[in-house]
Amino acid sequence: MPLIATTQNNRARWEHFPHGADVGVRGIGASRDEAFVQAALALTAAVCEPERVKAVRKVPVSCEAADEQILLAAWLNTVIEEMSARKMLFSRFSLQSRGLRLSAVLEGEEVDRLRHAPAVEPKGATLTALRVARENGLWTAQCVVDV
Image 1 (spheres, rainbow, N blue to C red):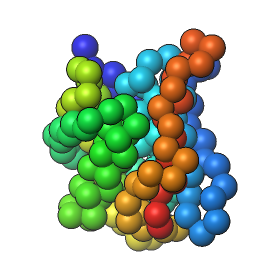
Image 2 (image 1 turned 120 degrees about the vertical axis):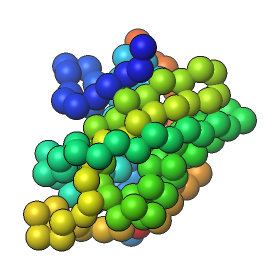
Image 3 (image 1 turned 90 degrees about the vertical axis):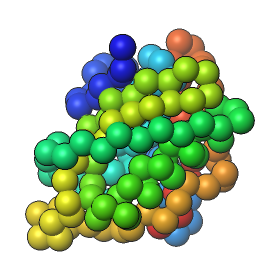
């Protein structure tokens, strides 16, 4: 069953961490998939408030990588590529992974500059501060995003 995130529960959450001119995105969840979804929400939150983005259009995506850390970067870069190519923002993510492959459905809408008031344009997830780990029962997925 794919993981669908629309709101934060008492354990799953996203956050930003400081990194010079770029932005660090971090997702925390009970599973790796949940942490990846929260990292994608943190990516959206670097651009605008995710609550302002209506989930009116679905975009299926998939990616794979050689290890968990690179899979996170590939996942975020896939989201960034879809944001750029479709001129969209995403606020809902349905994600299912098997090993080092994942498939997902991104839900969002075209950018409305007045309503969304985008703060930055993400250019790519980097290997800086790249980390996917399970500690104390929670997964953390983080990296720095070039903006």
